[in-house]
Amino acid sequence: MEQLDYKKSKRKYWLLSAASVIVFVFIWWFSTAVLKLAKPITLPDPVTIIKTFIVKLTHTAPDGGTLVGNTLASVKIALSGYVMAILVGVPLGVLMAWFKPVDRFVRPLFDLLRPVPGIAWIPLMIVIFGIGITSKIVVIFLTAFVPCVVNSYTGIRQTRDVHLWVGQTFGASNLQLLTTVAIPTALPFIMTGIRVALGSSWCAIVAAELLASSEGLGFMIQQARGINRPDIIICGMLAIGAIGALMTFLLGIVEKHVVKGVMHK
Image (cartoon, rainbow, N blue to C red; front, side, top):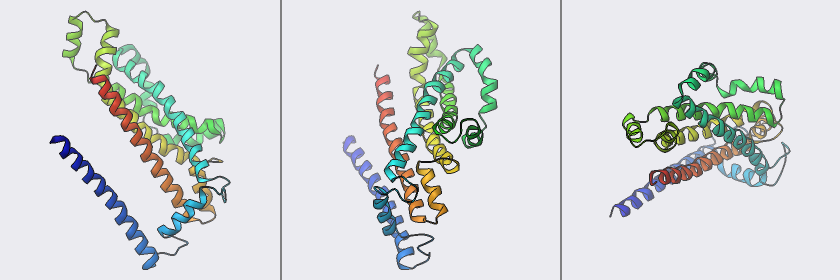
């Protein structure tokens, strides 16, 4: 019975979500194609956007790359910096929370860098590394690094003392307490940080490509702005939103399986 109610609730959620998109597209189409509230050169109607989207899948004009090629270029760079941030940020946050000497050594520098937004690093990275891939990967890394560290640190610090006391009673070492008690308990916090870092990474790569790049969705949007092609700009924006939503959805599936697997152990 509960499973049936859950399926009905989920079906209702998806229907409402689809309805909101349909209503939005209808209002957009009615305002532009019927009422003519905006000129096509300013805000094209949805039909024009669909046609441009289909054409841009295989044609390289005017920015020199197809929509698929630009999307893959952005995803590759974003995921490179993002994975590096996870591999460095999560262990560092755990070590800072568990070992006080590490916390005291790292915290002053981390607190200095933490308030600086990822976009603020873009000009400096361009000066140091140029407009190539390296500068953007470093920007993504710095952007995603902070939430990975903060949430990992917070999760470990939230470990209940009673759980640690039980482990100590059974003779667990400090390392065993960390790996079998603290980290599994902190896993939801850690996964939240990884999810936040993913969104930050995707935003940062587009911003970096808008400022200086030779490929990617941000570069495509910037080139389209220069020649006054709002249809290509909107196609790029829709691609950014769709890819971001897809990556978040896939990460949610991974998170569900990881957390469930740890909880069942």
